[in-house]
Length: 340
Image (cartoon, rainbow, N blue to C red; front, side, top):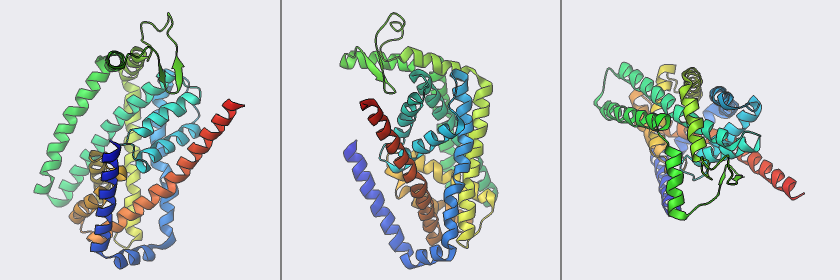
C-alpha cells in the first residue's frame, strides 16, 4: 500500500506538471497576478463549511454523551480534514485521528468511534445528495448531454452501495464480526480503542476485548435517532453548498465569473471524482483533469480550470498546514505531560 501510494503520488505530480506546462505557465501566472491577494480571503472563508459540518457532528455526539465545546470540535474537524487532504492516508486517516482526539478530550472511546463512523456514513449520504444536485444543475444548464450518462449510472450504483452500508450498520453486527475475525486471525486477547487500553472484565466479556459489540450498539443507537440524522444531513449538505462559494468567488476574482448554480455543479462533480480516486494522495492530477472536463461545460478555458485547481490547493495548504502543526504541538504537550 505504501509503494502504491508513492507511485500514485508521483504520477499525480507528473500529471499536474504536464497540465500546467500544456496550458501555459505564463497564462496561469497572469491569471493569479490579476486576482492578487484577494484570493487569500478563501482561507478564512473555508471556516464556514467546516463550521456547518461541525454543527451536524455535535448533534450526533450529544445523542451518546456530553459533547465537547464547539471550538474544540471545530479544531478536531480541521485536523481531520487536513490529515485526509494533505497526508497519504487514503482519506481515512483523518477519521482515526478524530476518534483519538475526541477520546483524549473526555469522550469515551466507543462513543467517539461510533459518532465518527455514523458521521462519515451521513457524509456519504450528504455528498450523494450534493452530487445529485450538481448533476441536475448541469442537465438544466446544458439541456442534457451524453457526457453525463456515466454520472447518472454512477449515482445509481452509489445509491445501492450507500443503502447497503446503512443497512449493515443499522441492523448488522459489523464490528463485532470484524473483532471475531481479528481474534481468529492474530489471536488478539486484548486491544486498544482510540488510544485507551481495554482490560477484559466481567462487564466487557460479552463485548469482547476490542469493544466491537459495544461499538455496534452505539452505532445502532445513533442510526435509530432519525431526527438527529436528518439534522446532521441538513448541516452537512449546507456545508457542501457553502463550500461552493470558494469556486464562485475564485472564478469571479480570476476574471471568469459563473453563476452560483454552475459553481455548485462544478464543485460537486469535482468532489465526486476526487472521492472516487481516494487512493491518490490529495487527488493530485485528478482534481485538475475533472475541473478541465466539467469546466468546459460552463465555458471555462482549460487554463482557467487549472488555475482554479491551483487556487483550491493553495487554500488547502494554507488552511491545513496550521491545523496539522497545532495537532503535532498538542500531541507533544500531551506526551510531555505523561512523562512528568
